[in-house]
Image (cartoon, rainbow, N blue to C red):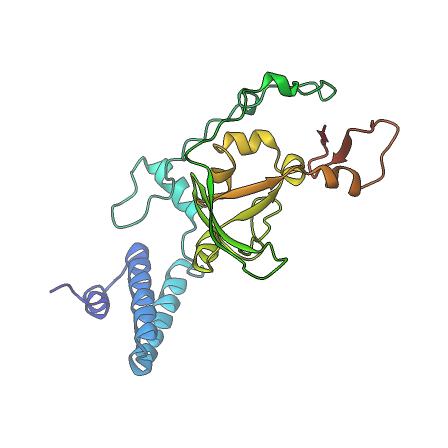
Length: 259
């Protein structure tokens, strides 16, 4: 069996040196913490009295008050002696973690002239039905004059039962609700605002994350509006702006433009 701190103290009670007293004080301190954690007030009082006696003997021997070694002091002493940290104590100078490589955001979205006109509609391929996007009507109201209906929208990210409540995550997140809570609440579809995402965090950050779904850590369907209303509603236009564009200052001090 391993010797208790009290037995070690009695064995070295004849003429304990400075290092021996330090070891006994540390052992008594650990024993005191264990006694307090276990709720044993009687044993804790005995250990405390012994600990105070050891500290008085240390002060009488060395002429200075006992203080635990700081990490900085232990590091200096280990460097001076050339000894490696012991296995019983944590390494006071652990190896630093390598810094993460800086991501070149410029490679995700090339710089574009904000005044450049968008491509004409004729340059896009003609519309064709796609099997991964479809809408089916499940029920139509029989009430005269009513156009109400119950439907189902099929998307690559999931099925949306209509009508349904669609929460708005303006900047790609719902307020005070994380992804797990949103799923548990039955969220089928989320709204995001194109203009606000353009301003912050910006298209380069979203593209660098792998797209809006990965940026949000969202698995379900997402719908985004154009942001055209916010372009003109969030502030007065200036002489630097044209009728088709509104520039808004963002948190970092840059500008975002939306055509």
